Length: 266
Ligand SMILES: Cc1cc2nc3c(=O)[nH]c(=O)nc-3n(C[C@H](O)[C@H](O)[C@H](O)COP(=O)(O)O)c2cc1C
Image (cartoon, rainbow, N blue to C red):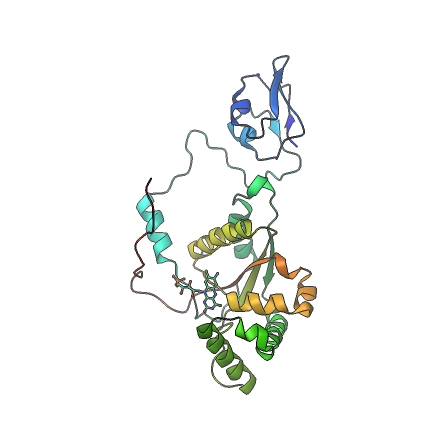
């Protein structure tokens, strides 16, 4: 919950206007907060005298704007989003931990409903081979269960059966993990919180020269395998995305066409 540094507060009331849960008031010329606070930090961001503390949050990475808020050219932004591709071919190169820490800051600063900040990451690089085995076990469980197999759309069922055949025969390339050096698992109670963080992380990874592939197949196979969830110390419903990540070993010549935006103006 927010703390007001009364010696700095000038009672200007700007924080009150920003406060979404309406937990601030002015008493004796100073701001004061009640326990409805969600720690969103809007009061912190707007305060002209820096009179706000958020003791449950970390100030690491906070930027002072000093009249120049960072901006990005909108065409550059859109072109960057358009240039993102799912990467299915990676260089044999490890990701430095510092690079990954930097990329995950994009998740940390992504919004969450009620500012709950319930997104948790598992980065697997050193133990990827151990996890791969568990994913393949999960896939085998799915394919051995007619009820589960039949619930999968035909085109994906055929892909999965071919993937398993190539793996179990030791033939062909691994088109489940491709040759990515690492896997990032994004966990949350909320699909939207986890998805939003994943998307920002993907763009941030691109800005670091890395590429990502969301793998629904890996997510499905992991979620089905209790041994994998125990190993990762998560429950299956927490997994919101599984992202293969590494340095792309492919360069694209252009962006791709898409269906027109489906929008209803009202
Ligand atoms: C939620 C989600 C799950 C996906 N699962 C897989 C997968 O299991 N295997 C795969 O090769 N691609 C997977 N993809 C990648 C999509 O096929 C890809 O995003 C789509 O074909 C468009 O290509 P692009 O990402 O390069 O624009 C997934 C993408 C998303 C968003």
